[in-house]
Figure: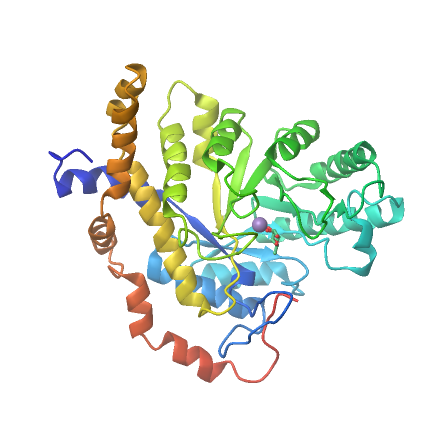
Length: 401
Ligand code: RM4
Ligand code: MN
């Protein structure tokens, strides 16, 4: 924002884009979770996918932008997915991406889609095909594949052979995607495998997608990189290739921390958003522009010690703040500074936008459409949490394992 710009100008510029920004929350972020050391249960957490949908709908109601919930199969298995989708619709949310899970079955010890045995690969393929079928019932536009595949010791398996198995498997699955739906392939640099991971980074994910088909795209989980990796640069290149499918958003200090997005490094989140906002307005690069417009913003977070619904609300607000700041970047001034080679001015333009306190602006945007100005405080002041604790007694609380 330039110093001359008024709050009304800023509001007019930022509000339409902010109202359009849709954020997907993950079903697993509402259940109990923890580390491999301990899962700490909380009272009032959902006991089944329907109650997870209720929580997602609550986040949607308070924030106005969390309009879909991602499912994880088999964690969210139900008998009738069309009924779950209808239940969601009645509460004002959609079923979003269907996340496959090929990392928790005994058979997957040596991998799933990359496994040396054709039998195990067939089982993993059948699972992802089942996810495609579920996507059909829920009208989901995304089927996501994240693999725990890899090896622990040098010599354990052959890199190229495994990659070929993966490409062949995804090619077999691809035609089963619902019409217009996309396959998102997510990378992670290590874990659970410690020596090599089959889809370890964005380049590996991208080249596999290129073999599979146009609608195979890369998912960037912000927690899945080595320290210091320039994620906004990766995002820029994936946009340019038209292959950025979506984000799994979270934050972390070290490994895959699954902390609230923007809680540790909001400046990095801002830089990522800035690349997206710029691409959305880039008439000279229609591929990047379209790709940015279709990018899915999903939160991939597990709330281990913090209350879950308010953590989700805060995460949504953090992302909105990063986006609002990105929208305030004066792109003309930035472009001029870049072509003049004015290093300091270019950086100032970015930093000025980042340093703007956008919270009053966001409060005004929300008020404009009848939402609470501060969704987090409004939720805390309501009886929502108590009602959950009182009504969700008995049964088994949903948990990530
Ligand atoms: C993985 C990856 C996937 C998520 C699972 C729970 O590390 O991030 O996206 O579905 O965790
Ligand atoms: Mn993820």
